Length: 510
Image 1 (spheres, helix red, strand yellow):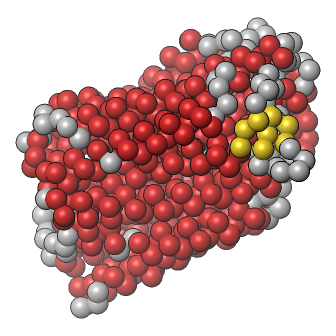
Image 2: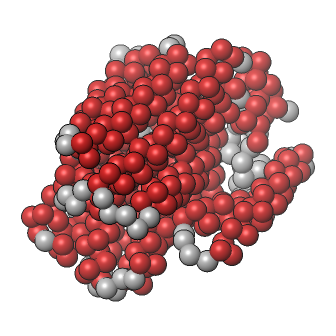
């Protein structure tokens, strides 16, 4: 048997219909994708909106600064440790099943978050919410990888990028509107409770449109194939990876005690131990938590590196401008969200357009995209320096619009290129790896840039001090993006290594 066990049969007369091995039913790929994108939008709106709601949450629950910090940190840590194990579990037991379990848990946790009045319970539920998001998130890329191929997959990932762009920008604006309309207490609660109807829509649609029990049927049909995921959980690898990710993220996701930095050397030891164990596990003929041969794929390894640098820099841009607008300029949360709206518009258009060329022109598009992001951040930073001279902060939107062009391209092109040569049997764990790397990079980048912002502002409260601090933070982001440009150029020049794909495939079979 071969990888054909994982490939759906596409109807010749209408390519939106597919047949899955082991099932007599036909499935509509457009409906499968619709379910995935609805849930993706729900989770990203939630993630991007919380920053705007923090002040209202603090007033309503009487939370201490440390408790408020854990509203963000708890979620980030939980999703970070869940992504790769959940991707692996989806590859083994069924991606649709794991997707629905994660979605149900996320919907319940979100609803409960909107009803609690105690900061401790809110933080506990945010951890549950993060774990649930970590369960369904890798299944999204895994299912796309499994049921779409070629240009259809590129189109699916362009819609994936479109939803990311719109959702991330819509979250802060929506929450700002809810707080303005309903007041602080009911406003922040509504930002969580809105997930209940969206989650129910996703659950109902998923129950009718997603292929279930697919992995068991494929395993039975493809018995003996090395490309069909084995019933092997690799518990040692799973625990080691979870602890390593936790030790990396905790120092950056939390603040306060200096002891937390001692976790970083422990993370290095655990990381080395994880690599040793996974190689040893594979040599004994077992299926490791992460098949490290993924990193022999040129397309996967380079694009993971590009994604790491992108998320290390660019993800803190709007968190920084929200702080600057609200604390430095004393403007509302709504304005903080609206300033970034041009970014959403250009990003959404770029994501849809670039999907057509993500396979054949993807390497060159990435170079252009990360260059545009670097230039956009610099433009926004220079516009911030003009604010003390009487210019409007809305001029920063010009830079954010330029940044959005690159951001939208990257959201579809990088994902398509990273998964280009990944076998469908490993789609879930590969998606988990890319997202875990991005989460770690986000935590580190946010810590560095916000640390620079507050260090420069210090005890000053003038608009000039805040503007200089924002520019310095954006300059650091631009430097990181310059490094990202270098890696993207290297990938463009190297190109896809067909030998690495063949080597990976032969290793899988032998």
